[in-house]
Image (cartoon, rainbow, N blue to C red; front, side, top):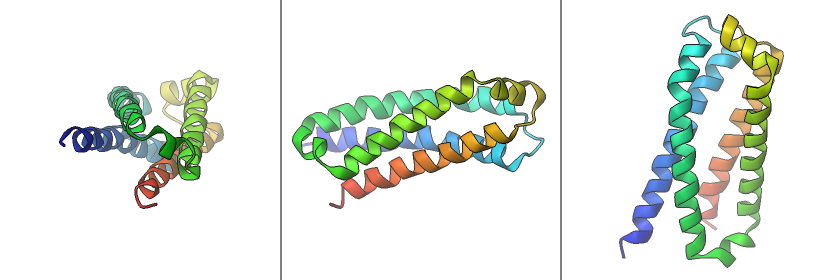
Length: 137
């Protein structure tokens, strides 16, 4: 009786640990502020993002296993997964780009970094909204 609500709670905690730091970092990069330094902020927040993502993935797989057919054929769930895949591809592209290295080293994000951050915010928030909508359908 307690297992499903506990896993759902862990999923929500994971979402907070994932999306909260992303909002802070991406907003900082989009605004082009000088402080705090990008490298300091990223080194502080990205480990929390990774922890949150791991918790979301583990709890999400367990929630999916409880009702796989309900989720697998749910259009909102499919769009949610698409947003997550695109968000992960975006962060992989960004972190491998020379623009990210320059933003970290020189504390000045260029247009590519800002574009990737705007896309990141849009995709993660879309995944979040779609995930919440699934519960009301």
